[in-house]
Picture 1 (cartoon, rainbow, N blue to C red):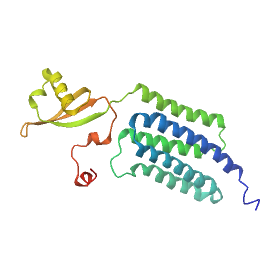
Picture 2: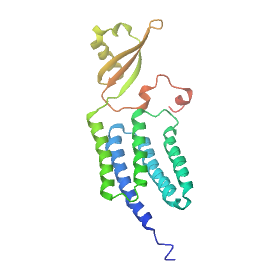
Picture 3: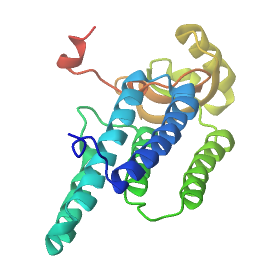
Picture 4: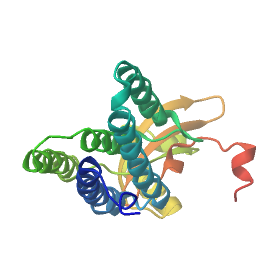
Length: 218
């Protein structure tokens, strides 16, 4: 009975690294990512994928140590599957969310295989990642944008850009910061605009046309 309740030294060390990894990931997701995006669905996915990947890598590497030669092959196949998760989606994942997913997976793998690494070095490694994400979020501020099919062709000329912005602000109810004119269709008297505005970004902003399956959600 006592042997059943006894943890190995490696497992105890793993719990310490898991705690550190979860704390760092929680900070990245909820203090940096969620603060700007307000996407609960991605935050939920990032957190659970991080924990799952951590355990997969840990048990794949350290529990299968007695298999020796087979371990290397298992690690290679497993890591291939881990990074293939980045294609696990129903809709196209935005670049920002894809970047955060890569960081979350990388942290899980690094912390899971850090057996024998001094705790100070592991903490410093995690701190560097957090610092890099924080600096990028603060210094490289991104503004949300929306694709708009516009019908008033007389306002798309450069000399009437202020009138164009005023008309878009009135019709969209948004504070317009910048307007870029894209494709122009003189046959249908319509132009495609990218409108940069103040607010919270949404993956729906880059959708030009809704599918029938998407319309059923409204």
